[in-house]
Length: 318
Image 1 (cartoon, rainbow, N blue to C red):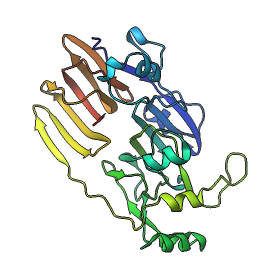
Image 2 (cartoon, one colour; image 1 turned 90 degrees about the horizontal axis):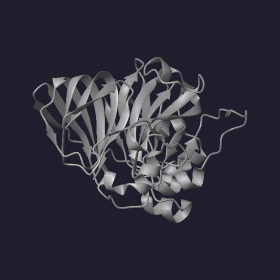
Image 3 (tube, rainbow, N blue to C red; image 1 turned 45 degrees about the horizontal axis):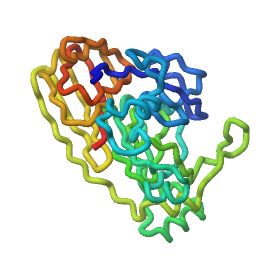
């Protein structure tokens, strides 16, 4: 079986809230100065990433998933389960919420809802996110939305680089201006906007809101999930497991020289290099890693090692 990692060419999405940091900090070629999203590891039809190396060069990750499921340990399901993005929020994103799988399948006729998580790569001083709400019940939430009591309804949380937030489906949330975030999520593009600051969209008209759907799917009351980080120091590397839940696991790897050989405990791995450079060693072959790289390590790899000086976010389906 092929052990060649799949290095991916991301796709990019322009947003009214986007900026230029995807170009300025990662060196990506972006479509405009309002580029909000880099879909780094994606098989979603709205933004599939293209494989840049090996025998599948030129094909999309979706092609590989469909035609070569052995690369993914014959993981169940018709659709690639995860999506990794980097988001540059020059301005505030809309306040929004995502449905769970059951609602998405029933109402939107798509396979996945959207549970996600955020790693704060960088942010302005005193930057914030919207994370949850203060309403005690769905009825109270509905009243506050109808009366536009946004200041008292929405919970705002200060953030700093290195912070991590788990955003299960049903969580009212918004990434606010000044934040650069790596997002690991289910492979879904469903967003229900509940509030958009009464601002115009790119066409000069207010963007569509989804008030009823938002009220239906929002978690009421909001409860912050409890997170327990598991940290392991080995050789010249630190591994922090940020999240392990029923859909995926996410870790932060900090390599400061080399790792010991890392034995497989995943069906396949998604890797995004946030900073630095190094090499990924698989058997006797080394693959260069650079800031901004996104790749998938296939199922046939039973052990790997990383050398160099690099920070990575690494995830896998469970």
